[in-house]
Length: 219
Image 1 (cartoon, helix red, strand yellow):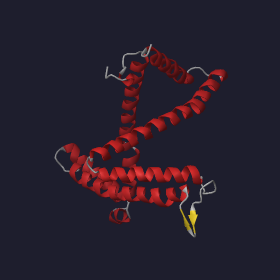
Image 2: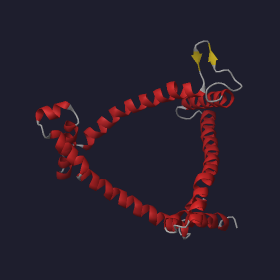
Image 3: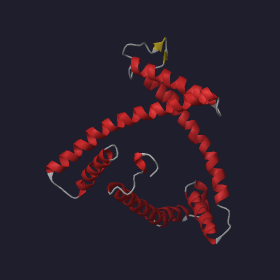
Image 4: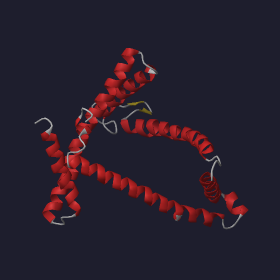
């Protein structure tokens, strides 16, 4: 029963969601909208609780064992607790039970998000640019014919995006846009088609009960 009930629920919910595209009946569409808009929100809430719980347990264990970079785990847990208290007690704009302003200094949840998290994300993406440049240098080495084509096309696309490219040749932006619109779009659609076929195969294996690793046990 422990294995059959989750599998039965998965198959029923999967068929309901999958059949929405093939049964254009108003009642069926309303049922699917209910499942998507209401049930998925409830499932997301439970998934969020489980995810946060696992995250905290993982970092607490790392602190206890003095694992690698355990100081970062202390920072994560302290930030999580502090921001959670401010968000729950202070409200979104600091007008609930907890004061979130000292003089002209504001520390409500939206201020923390806009001036703290957004700034940290911008810094992280700025640092990623150097890693991307390093990876591009290693990947674009002309070791074969395909690598040469990749190197030349990437060079042309980059030149077409900056003013110096148009100064070198008036058609450079046009060629760059053509590469992005025709060969790049064709290859992207091929990748998307392969991903879709793989997702359909995985879906059919799960719905038919062939793939059961999601139930635990690794089988």
